[in-house]
Image (cartoon, rainbow, N blue to C red; front, top):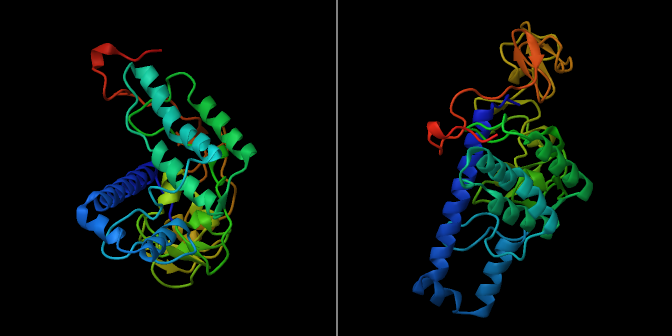
Length: 317
């Protein structure tokens, strides 16, 4: 599995949110147009078929025709309380805290898209959320956003307590809309922001890394591929390849496979060091970064922290 940077994750999140919003706009436009309305009312059977194709991951291929619509439908019932609480912590809470620090209004965030998609998946029985896991994530987010030192133009980082808490329930061969909907060890082959797929086991050869997982992006599950790999080995150059064995020669972390890294030109499965320890090939455990050869806790980002506030206003503390 390639090592993703924060920039990669941010770009994937923005891309998924943009596609979801564009799909939603197209869906609304289709519903509001006279032609679309005439088509929708031409027969109750046709309307029921279209509704069922977008309401369940195990149903058909989606809306008929050439309409572009998000894989998670716009109108699919009220928000699920646990989904709303988790998405608020992941998106709305950082926006509110940043606004308080910078003295402005909360900017754009994806809490609504997150809640809509996650609620749809939970209602369909495709994913489960534990109240205890959500509570730990919310608490960890609140702690990580204390004060204003964390503020930067980038998204607030997600604490480890928030990773891996959206658990899939669909077996191999089931229709899915995200790899998070499949049980651990399976990925949703062919899924994207506007397309459903099938839960499948990792492949030995073939294409990989070609689409954005809509649900994983909006729920900020940046390490979802660890539990839902596309390849038996690793993804390199958009194609599955065999892992280099432990001790084998390497030039990048990705070729060593999941849970391993390239240290001194050799693949290693040594654990990543915590804060205060020497870095391992420039790497540290989640929540730390390598500074002058040792793992350190992240410091406040220097420079422009509040992009929508004039520099003369400063940063509220």
